[in-house]
Length: 212
Image 1 (cartoon, helix red, strand yellow):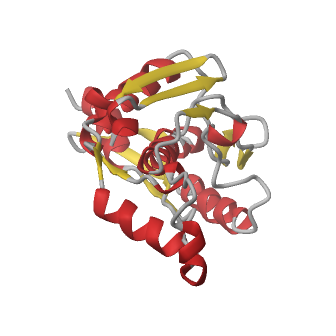
Image 2: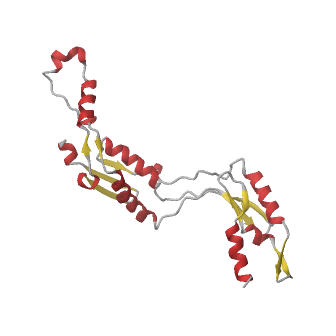
């Protein structure tokens, strides 16, 4: 219990620093679990001997805490850290004006902290009352879609078909011209399965000023 009262967590590394004490985290020790785990860890067959020995159960200490408060405090610190950092980006497709076609745009490895992953790791650490956590590159956000994804050839083929469609703009019944592939390409979006489609909001935003 005293260990929980004096508990402090220090997160450092990658030019990031975050400190949390027991009051901020609202830590409460689960004494029943400590007793159960401590009992289970003893050698029942040797109890006549072990009863006279000193036991260290610090590794068995488990705590509960205000998870929402941790999310708020740690989340705000990570958000502030990430503000001036390079975001990680998944591989996607982009329009090549010279070739008049879509092509794969490589993924970007940024240096922003993966907030969700870090909160989860710290959650586990606090419950085990770990005092220090050193950030490494494993704690940075990682791409989940890569340029060598086998779906991209089909994605590019489908996106090119969308961009190649001839769209004629009419205003008040008068032919106002044909929309070029580059413009149509700027409206193409990909879903989570890399399936392309037109972004209706982008089309409306483009057509809005022209209809005024």
